[in-house]
Amino acid sequence: MTKLTSLSDAISTHIEDGDLIYAAGFTHLIPFAAGHEIIRQNFRNLVLARATPDLIYDQMVAAGCARKVIWSYMGNPGVGSLRIIRGAVERGDLEWEEYSHYGMITRLQAGASGLPFLPMNQVGVQDLEQVNPLIKRIPDPYGGKDVIVVPALNPDVAIVHVQRADENGNAHLWGIIGEQKEAAFAAKKVILTAEEIVDESVIRSDPNRTIIPDIIVDAVCHVPFACHPSYAQGYYDRDNEFYLEWDKVSASADAVNAWLEKWVFRINDRSEYERNLGEATINRLKVKPLMSKSINYGDY
Image (tube, rainbow, N blue to C red):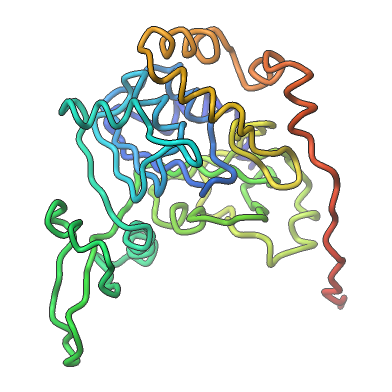
C-alpha cells in the first residue's frame, strides 16, 4: 500500500502539540516546506532539535511553535546570529539545550541503536559540561581516561528531505549527507519529503544510495523545491541572498510577522511558494547537470 500523501495531511496526522521534532539536514536538504506547514497548522509547545537550527527553526520560534530548542550550533550560516532564537533564549522565553556537533550525532546514534546512552571522547568545549547536566563524565571501565556520555535522543517525529523516493519511502540522497539516517532510525515516526517520486525500479537500480528504507517511513510527500533557501544537490542551489536578507528581516518583529504572513500563512502549499519566488529567483538557483559515472552492479 502506498505511503504517498500530501504534506499537509502528513503533518496533521503524525505531529501533535508538545512533540519533539527533528528536521534533519546539514546545510543541505533542509526541509523548510515541512517547517512552514507546521507553522500554518499552528502547532504549539514543540521541542525542536537540530544539529544547526538554521533559519527553519528561527522562523518556527518566531511563529510561536516552540517551547524548547536543542542544538549543537546556533547561527545564520555564513551571516551571523539567529536573532529570533538568540533573543528568546536571552529573555528566558525559550528553553534550550546545547551539545557539540559530535555530541548531538552521538545522541541520535544511541537512539537509533536502542541504547540509553553512548560514550564519546572528551571534547574541547568543556564549558558545555557545566551548563548541560545531561553531558556526564564517567570513568573508563577498562582503565583509560574518563569518557563523556550523552543520553539517547529519540524524536517523536523526524522530517527528512531527499532527492528521490518511491511511494513506499525507500529514498536516495546524495551530496552533503548529514544526520538524516541517524535521525530517521532514532525517531518514532518519519515524514519523508522528496524532490521526485520515482518507480521502485529506479531505487533498486542503485541500492547503495538508499539511505532511508521504507520500513522506518510513515509518510511520503512529493514536495519539489522543499529546501529553499537551503539547497538540493543536482536540483537547485543555496539561496545565499535569502540568508543575507533574513538577517535584516529578523531584526524587526514587525518585519518578521509581515514575512510570515506573506510567505507562510497566505501560501497554500510549496508549489504556490515556488511560483511566488518568481522566475528570476528560480533561474538564479538553477544548476547545470553534472552526472556521476555509471556503476556496473552485474546481473543474475
